[in-house]
Length: 338
Image (tube, rainbow, N blue to C red; front, side, top):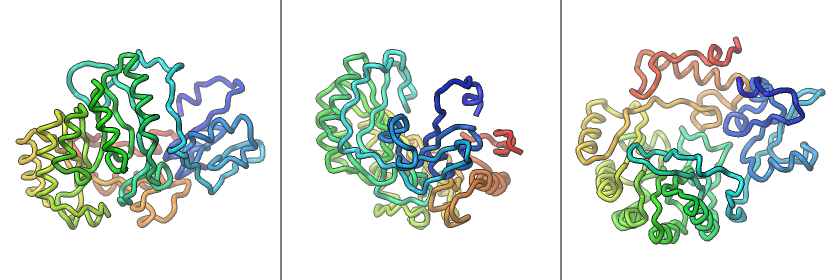
């Protein structure tokens, strides 16, 4: 809001993209005082703003003198047809951050192999934004690998919603194993076995973040994880992964089915094997998720305020995670919208 407000009048259009504009385009236009809010994936549709009537662009919502124009369609990107970026106009050399690596030095970059996810977990905010699972061409992704490596990058983080699903991921990893670059990603540990985890080690994986969510089958079922492995087997695979990969993280969400003493034992067992396990984070009902829709219906202009108010009122007494602000302010105060 502050950044948009600081822009001079000029002739440039201000465009908002992402899960906020996808779930609540009208509220996004109003709060940001921007010209356009894009619903869904904007990759292929952003350039069309300069050449086509906005009413003919999928996912385009806008404001003009006649008021707001809200579309019900979503933009969807054809990932299979997405060619390799050349990065010619991107200052890679200024980017030193290595995503989800907490030691040492190096130069990082972020690439995308696949988009979307075939699961429908209740808490995941991908339904209106990056939903259907699609893979890119392995050859095009490898071109991007080689281009960023030639400019000094030694660590690549995949921004995929979930890495390791597609039928071509093994071929990609075998090719990466031939290159001297480290990789990281987020995934589900139940996508892997000992053989494929060995391949990750050969492919120079140094950071693996895994969503476990609940330490009980009932909890995972409640979250609609569709996980067919036992908690014991998940623990075995996390421990095995840690033998190949320097940083393995297991994320937990607080559910009613998880006993705190059992959580502590689960954490201690895995931490003793070198796996970092988060404190359970209370689940936030993001507008656009199945959880929000079940609780409140379809998102409206007050969706974010409603979700945040529910979250803070529910967990102010129960407690937040150790990595969270313990006394969060209302959204209305943060956004000055009272």
